[in-house]
Length: 266
Image (cartoon, rainbow, N blue to C red; front, side):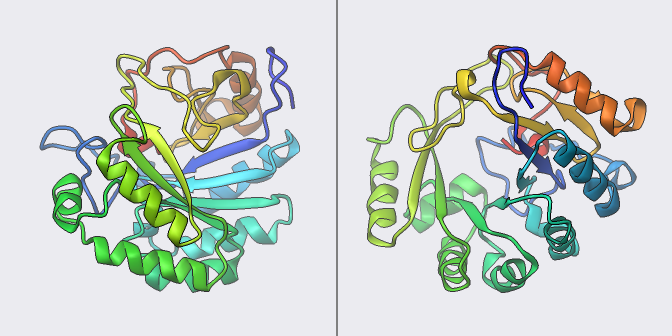
């Protein structure tokens, strides 16, 4: 499907939960995190129905995000449901990697194709501080498990202040090159002020080529990360929510005052 700026929209990012097992400084600001009531979170059956309708609009690429998608109970079941539909050719997941060692095999067997793993430094102590308690060795183990079970290509998401020349980013880049991984450097964004840029090593942040819509964990379809515009599938119905989101997709992002990264998936 084409939007009004003639961009082909074929990519849906699905936030399956706003929960996470880390509290990264750039994702969770402050000490308090307001979580959605669990009864507001879409069921796997509801998400699967959205994917079926999305496929009818030309969506053939799905990315599961969070929060942290691996903390949601039976997440492998959702991957299997999407895969068995036969309508999606590319199923991926963004994860912090902390639980990936034990999930890599069942996810691969269920039909997941590839993963993006967050890694902002190679220093264990810096990693612990940046994530508020994370164990970097679990991430390394998750990466190795993903390689072993064919979740390729494995992309490493590294958040930077300004550029990939920063010391932490340079070390991550070297690690990726030595281990057959694809580094992606993402300048730290600010939803409220509209600060974002094109991803170094990826296509995100390039509004002229944006091909995606988003589904929040409580059922809102958003045409743009940097926008307050959203359409509730429970209010409008799935088909109409997609139609409205496509019609409302802006030429470029501006600001988002409704969401935070922990509930929209970045």
